[in-house]
Length: 313
Image (cartoon, rainbow, N blue to C red; front, side, top):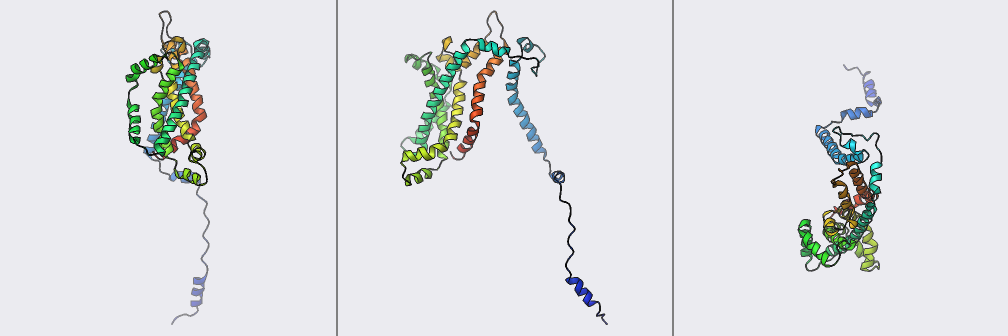
């Protein structure tokens, strides 16, 4: 016989709401980090990246460090890694050389002229390759690549005879023409990717709104190409600024030396004087300083330009 008095209690307990869960403390950040698995491969790659970065940075640091030390300290068998008690005497001695400012002016003139005309010609060529389909287009692109592969040393004699026959030896114009011709192929290839990465539909939409083809390109496409022009200009600037062999061939006169040729004068030891490596390092820093300043100014646009150029080639 079943006890009917128990049934209501069972039904009531079954219909009663479940008890609320007991709140627990939120998981703290150290507890979460402890559960993250540390991968040995990631640690190894990070250590390798630090070592490679140190190998790149150390020559620059050693140049700056040596430029602040006297020559007798640099000739010691015990290296000095921290320039304690250093001075700027080496910089003062380097700047006292009257040819430094002349070489600086020549280098700036040649580099700025070469970069301007290089960007102008490369920009027009890149637009023609990317926006128009004409006969001989593929042959032109192939010629640009082949010219880029030619060794510069194989062209010295021809370049010298051409410049000499034109009466442009020991002149800024002659060196600027050769620099521009040497840098243009690479710049064309860089700008081609930037121009091709901008859809032509933007220009067509602007033309539908009433702009001409030239107006649509200058008002829509050209502003978008600014990062690419900056990135290409930086590479052209570096190649023209650091060029040594062409300047050595085309600028034999001592009063027409560029900064790389001027720096060579510090390295060459005369019969009565040994090389002052402190002054050499100070002069090297002076040569590298304009490039560093220029790069710091344009590095933001250069980075975005490199990423934009990688979208489409």
